[in-house]
Image (cartoon, rainbow, N blue to C red):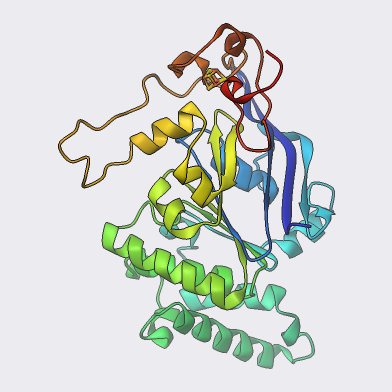
Length: 327
Ligand code: SF4
């Protein structure tokens, strides 16, 4: 069984304008020691998926209305609040896009990492209060060293505003990895950083995933990042998974017209003289999503059935009437 199995997840937001159907039956899994990339345009539901898995959807206005999230065979949507708090930060940890806003501005980096150790580390159970604090601080320095920070003692005593974006993201990764989580959820971890720092952070993540034997759910709009980092990929569009599979297979032969469009929109040196392609139209309004296939208003291959009936994920790979199903 896979480490994480998300099945038919539905999350809605109840707003004055109407019900936003942010996730409409999302299913995918993340294998042991595998990296799964969840990719799609802004607003397609990637971050809502991450927040639903960890039960961090603000309620109200959000609500998970159906589905299951099996993590180590346990449905996270059914465990108690206390249990999910114990899982977050220990078994499942998260890295966010804006490390400066994810870190607490009034505590030092070292205090924030040590706090996570004090909350979750079983090794500290039988120690005195003073010993626990000393040990947690030592572990936070070590965690900073592991993520490649040159002067971990000095950085541990610094506040987030005293550090660069790249340094904050390294600290955030140290905080996420210090309790050796089984699953790391990284939501656009490099988007807010300079290009050179992005590459360093990706390299670091790849090294740590190997070192700690963790599985990763990597959320990104950047297909290049997926190609470089992931084993599997799931492409999301308007609250649904529309294509998924092994990264090599999907990149070699994307099937869904939306995935093909995303691939064609990647700039490359060979395509330098050609005009950059884009997918015409815009992401649909999820209060009143299009009928049938949600991509049909933007699809160059649209047929009658596409407007009327929603395609299933055929062969577990692609949700598109071009590839099968009753017509
Ligand atoms: Fe295009 Fe129809 Fe396939 Fe949707 S189901 S992607 S509209 S061909």
